[in-house]
Structures are given as C-alpha cells and as structure tokens.
Image 1 (cartoon, rainbow, N blue to C red):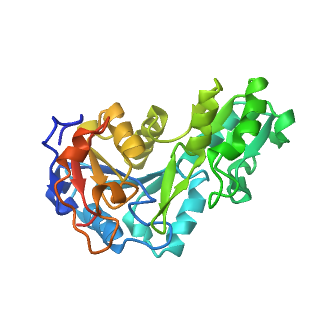
Image 2 (cartoon, rainbow, N blue to C red; image 1 turned 120 degrees about the vertical axis):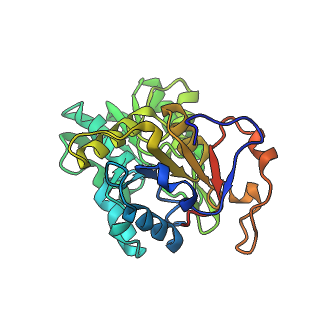
Length: 301
C-alpha cells in the first residue's frame, strides 16, 4: 500500500485485514470508533488484531500499538477496554494523547495549571509537579474536553477562552478530536475548544493525532518492544475512523493507512444503520482534503 493518498477514484475497499496483513509488521490502531463505539465493543476488530499478531513474523514479531486521543494516561484506557471485554491479547501496548500531555506538562515543573475539562480526566495530572488553579490564576491551561459534552458546545466557552487569551495563556489540548461517536451520536471533544482558542489568536500545543510527535512516540515504542529496532515505515499500517486525525496524521507522517467506515463518518457514508452496506464512496472521497489508502467497513479479519 502507498504511503500517500492515492489518485481520485482509486481507493480500494477491503473485505478484511487479511488482504493486506502479510505486508505489515506494525499496526497503529485507533481505539474509539474502531475497537468500540463508546457503548459496545466491536468483537470482530479485536479478533482481527489477535489474528494479525499470531501471524509468523517477517523478520520481526507482528505488533499492535493502540494509539488513542483519549485525554488520560494509558492505564485508564486499558481499564476501559477491559470493561468492554476487549482482550489484552489484541495489542502489545497503548499510547494516548494523555501520555503525551503529561510529558508536555512535565516540561514546565511547578507550573500553575488550570484544568479545562471534566473531573473524570483528573488522572492526567497525577503525581506531576504542578498546582491546579482557577483560570484567572493560570500560567497554562490543559483542555481535556467540555465539562458536559452531552449538552454544551464551544459557544458556551467563549467568555472563558477570551479571558485566557487576554492574558496570553498557552493551552495544551489533550484530545485533538473535534467529535467522537457515542451511541450513534457525535459528541464534541477538546479539539473544538482548542480550535476556538486558536481562532482568537491563542497558542495551542496539541498532544495526539494528527500531529507528528504521537507517531514518533509510537514508532519509538515499537522499537523498544523489539530490542530497539524501529519498524520500516513502509510496513506500518495506521487504522482509524477519522479522516482529520487518523488518516491525515498517517499521510503526514508517511505511513500506509486504512479508514474504518463505520465510525464518525458513518452517516456521511450511509452506513449508520446496522443493516446498511457500504456502497461506492469514490465521490465522497474525492471531495475530502485527505484520502485514505484503503477503506474497510469495519475492522475484521
């Protein structure tokens, strides 16, 4: 598979991962939208990853690293996956935007930090050298999401963001996603607030896809798993359901990629209903700013 977006009209639709697995050593797999939908696991996805990991290695073991824009450290994501019944045998390691956010915070020891986001994301600050303060006293703001993503929008944060911008407070966005699927609905994420802050002229550092550092960290992690030898980028496959993050990030980093249709783009692609089948999506793909190397309805073997 090529490492850049193919010419319009030439994006293959795969029936299963098995069609391309032989040419892959490492899968960088998205979590929400691929392994689960926020409510239920997709059993076929974890089965496909386990089958991939069980393949004989082509000079190195087949590896799967879950790369998530979740604004929490990786143990919290593993706990969620355990709760969904997703086997740990489906992956080798987890890397989250929460992990990268912690590294960005640690680069400023003793900083006065304002947490813009729900209390459930508080573990992102555990054991770090910082002081959590109100927005008016902050040196930096860490945005993990909306306080109530069931009813709020970025408009509800105009005054807060304007006040932070007036003091030139830098923001760390702990989840670059704009939206995520939950029970068939699209739920706003921290990326929306970061985008609104940038529109005001605010400075934002993004931790996670589609930004290059998360791919560099994932490749380094893969090397650590295998005696320090990083994989060949041409034999890495990024799998995800979001063009803006999963696919754009992979294209920018120069690695092959696979778009899972039944995710945040399901309604656009006409497969939001369970009984719907993926049809010809060439016209839709041609209209996008970035295009995948291949498409699969769901991640299955």
